[in-house]
Image 1 (cartoon, helix red, strand yellow):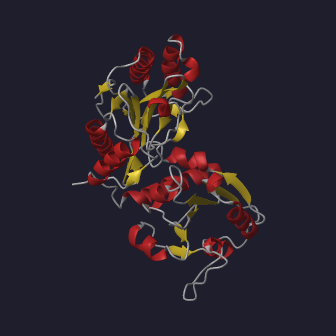
Image 2 (cartoon, one colour):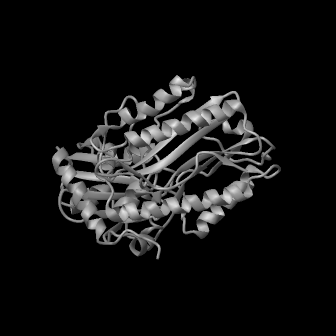
Length: 389
């Protein structure tokens, strides 16, 4: 049976957010979500199990009581059918000025906020989740509806609330990793000289869909030869060649949650430069694994891997933060790069992603997922570092 998040868990999540609101002095929280890749759906999925599509959504929460889901005029029925928040309202600010909905009851933000007990916005502190995703017109509409409110960026606060995973979340994420491994097996069965990158990506995604994936957290990356050089490569009609390095990054989304496995696959002979890079990345991955534990700053773990790559002469190609959280976003805060002091905690899901990119011969990543235990870390999949076809 495919694991899911039980309905009983959602009210517990609302209570956790409300406890955070009280501690931060937030009167209400507006958590925005849309269907933009990677970050867009996160708040609606975590708070309501609602997979946003086409129209944006906001979850409105006060310090007490149940949340309200605010949707566009074409999403209300699906929100009531699929979501876990029974109070669904159509938000006037989500409507298009050229579209007519003559049989739809809509409310403005000011009216809805009055319904949750705030007659005016004076002295109100409003926390906003995913503020960076809100379009300029909608943001102006929100501010116009609450002209006297103090607006607080609450994105990291909300991410911190969900950083430590429940037992049900861990089970769902484990399943997502098993789906990622299915995709990897499909890739290895398909990669060969003359096959296009997109053909390999299609086999990966088809296999993962059949295994239960609802989509991907990031676009599946299959990049051969020089196409492997960029951090965020895109799969093309490029034909894989004999002796190519094929970069794979496989990140299925299952029940709103993600897994991520990154590996190079070698077709035929391995160039010495690429072999050296893989050796360094593999050593860095193993060293970070051994360093993972609760109650430690994540950047200390990241520095262990970065130091290995530096000493191997490829430090300038370690181009981004190599340790990050994973959940309803594939690359989720807290991020544990050199400038961040966030702590690793028990039952976080951590991705250690060792990058070596922008080299003359191409690039690669070695990415693994872990659950933080009470005294270390548990790997969530078993994938060899060296893959050849």
